[in-house]
Length: 287
Image (cartoon, rainbow, N blue to C red; front, side):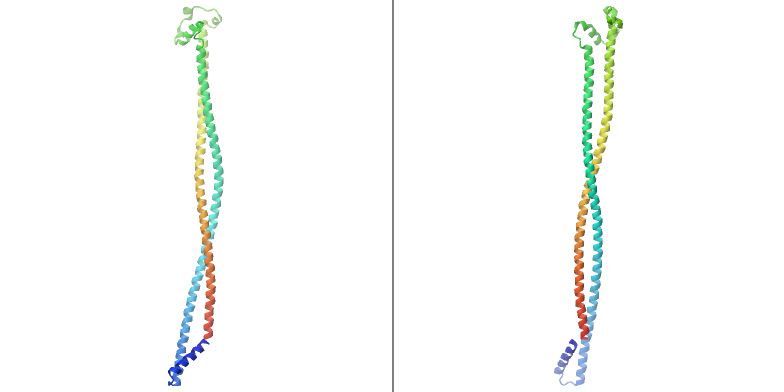
């Protein structure tokens, strides 16, 4: 219809401007104008079709790319979520283990303190026993009747003295055990035996203490090292939780943006397709 209208307009123009031109030439001119117009329409239709095909291809490629991106980001979310949950679980486990180690360390430290206290008490008891034995031998040093015995106990060479010659004989109970010298020897021997027994007991108690303390300290060192290692791992897990939480958040934002972009892309394509189809239909009617 538009072509007919243009034909009439062109013919009217030619008639007015060339009123004296022969009828044959007028028709030729009209045909030339119409031919040029049809050619222009054809070129416009070809260009329009080419632009539409380019746009359609670009739009399809963009949609494919964005959908691929969305799928990739959804995979990132799944993977990061799995890692996030694994680290949360590990944090829970480590927290419990660290609490147990903290309790064990406190108990071990308390045990070591008790062991040290016990050892100090044992050593004090040994010193008291040793002092008591020494005191027992000299407890009657101020007794005039025991002064001779005391002097003998304090004299390193008292065993070399001839008791019978120096102090006479004694027929009391002590005589049955060798006289005064025999009695002194018996007393000294008993005291020395008791003192030696106390020293041996002290040495054994110290040895057992050192073994027990070394074992406790090794156990304490092991627990402290294990706790430090777990605390380091816990710190790493918390850092990973923060990292994966951020990754998931960003991926979800990117997925949302990409989906909105695809939706707009499809809406634009539908709109432009409708407009293009309308232009094609219009050109077909004009032809």
